[in-house]
Image 1 (cartoon, rainbow, N blue to C red):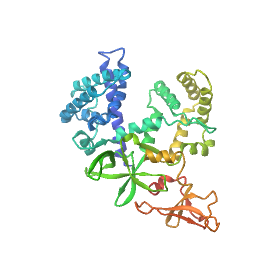
Image 2: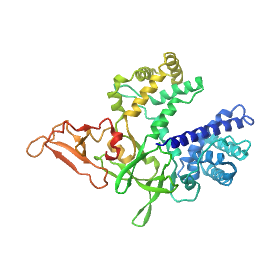
Image 3: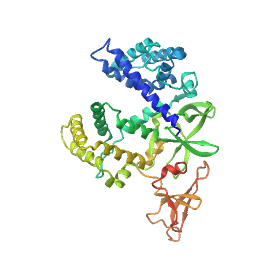
Image 4: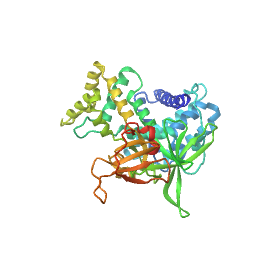
Length: 439
């Protein structure tokens, strides 16, 4: 990924944080005792972003509004339009008793944004680009647009909750680990290192698409990628389904939409990604986290300590996880083990490959892996479907069941062979990123 694209990504995150801080500071004048609660504006906006009835501009508001504010007078008209759209979404949404405070936060945020001028603009020194994908989300284009920043927020939320807290292996209590680094951030006034790890994890998610009849992919570390949902048409009639497209902004500023494809778990067969909504798109772990935890168990030192502590904590009838997290944080901080824990998390991130997958196929795949191994045999890649158990042909002869892997949309043959696997064949079992388009 080009360095300038990474700079753009970080610049947007920094701008979002600056805007949030400036908003809380603004509320000190009218709500000095509760101003910190207004940081929940991010959660309030997320509710509207996830609402199926929201417009594209509201669906991506936390991505768009810092860019419009940083542009100042140049984008004043579109900022006014966006704030009006936010008002409409706020009024039409049924908040319910548990989230009625969110409406208050949104009211305050709209009022604050309308007070910003050239002198009070907290983002006037930010260099945020409004690209063609942003323009499309701000316009009247049909279909649903999910900009990259919006997608990353959704992905991070999902990944944060993917605890692995069962079985006799090392446990991975991600939500508990998040508490440790939240305490660290408050203690040392630094960036939340767990959140940064989640950022990197989310940015590494691949999405498959077809270009020139070949399967390829891109990950969300690229600033120029987003998703577009077009209404699926069946025999001339619109349905409640959407064709998912991978939208890429080219270097010349033009937009190109490609048909997104999902793995099916049947060998390397992939089909167009067609869903009712974004919640039907899962994050597929090509190599399961459980397998990483078992295979790398001897490499995890700090994580083992967290795992053992958390296991004991779960045996208590009435445990206060926040109090327990502070206890463990103090111990690990004193022994300089938080850095080691981060290294263990990085080992997990680097050992796995993540990609988007239709939830109906992901549920069928469950926690299993499609291939026992992937080897290179001459100029071919072989995905080994079964070799550990006896597979016999009609003559009672032992065979190996495999698939010749290509990135073609049409060549998906499954084969059996009586030959042993080539000894010289290079295994890609631990280098799946290198052949992601073939598996």
